[in-house]
Length: 122
Image 1 (cartoon, helix red, strand yellow):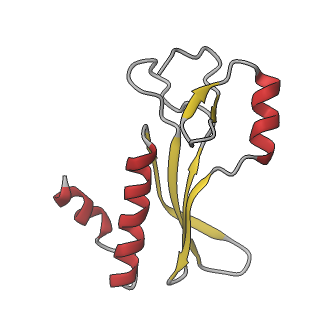
Image 2 (tube, rainbow, N blue to C red; image 1 turned 180 degrees about the horizontal axis):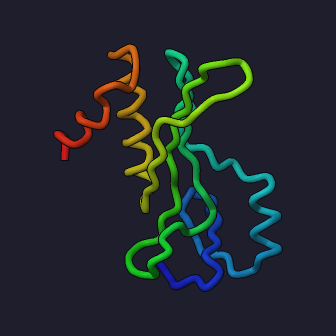
């Protein structure tokens, strides 16, 4: 992927990230873009995986980090808190992680133990 001084990206028609140096063009795209690649609600949890549109790799080394998976647990009608926040450099890895959380929640009552499960998987 090319260097991108603004750190802004859009998705092409095939869903691949491409640098977008024009901030106004990026903003127009961002306002209407379909950025979710996963959104599931089960057992009181909301699992969301999105294309960020911004590179969260602030080290300037390695691949851009452009996707994020977050898990929120709705514990009251007015607020929710997140349990997991993880970012990725590839769409495939982000989608796989999203799916692994969904599978875990289908088999378990909560996220308890999920982190240890991920550590064992390597």
